Image (cartoon, rainbow, N blue to C red; front, side, top):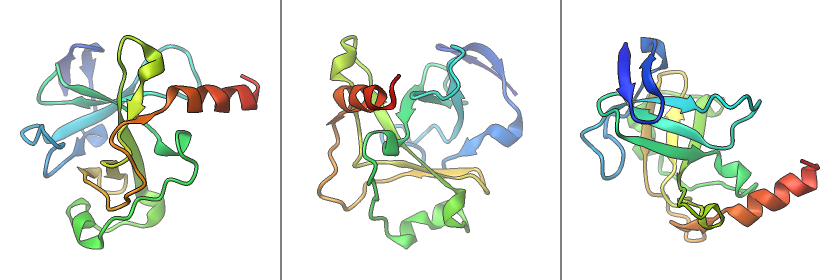
Length: 154
């Protein structure tokens, strides 16, 4: 399938890479099919990936692995809410958080309160609001990521 995107230009995506969100993404319920992309900057591991809409080439969400922000991230999710993504084993789940990346990169935040959960076995996903009170909608991440990279010697 060929799609025209704002960020990546015209791309060809195999049907097997398309993630179906039966309920859409919060605030964008009309878009139900996405693909996970990353920039082609030569990096081995990409901190920021993109959840690119297949239906709307203008719509792409920057996403980050929440464990890069909070090593102990463990959202409380009712099993009933996950039925929409099909049967899964824990290792089938891929969890991401939506990031806000303003012009001043030091003000970058992630939404730990509303993770995106993808079942890699069924290629179905959902974004939901978790019950954890300790998670914020706007968790500042720049200093956390910078400190982690310095600790790793990067």
